[in-house]
Length: 150
Image (cartoon, rainbow, N blue to C red; front, side):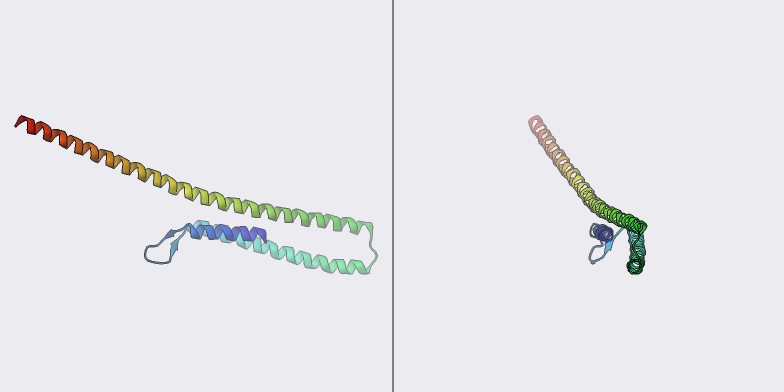
């Protein structure tokens, strides 16, 4: 479930960071990225269905086992299954955390790109102003020279 929420967060981020179509409420996104995320969501849902089916089967077998005498081997198997469930839960949590980190990194990368564009735009403006000022100074200097010779 956590893995699914992480993937949905990534999908939302891709949509929110997509390029807006002027004069509409539409957004352009990279099709490959979105399809990839949707495929991952499908895989998580399918694995969750398999896990749910296994849990139902396990519950049914546990009920039948309680009716019969419990053997030490059965306890070992249930311990192993509990350990597997804990491990799966830990892996899902790790995937959720990694998905959130990926979302944060993606947002930071987008912000860095915007910042680089702003810096480059500022440099261009400064360069244009410097060139304009140099051009004005050269024109003033030329006018002074022309006025003195006349």
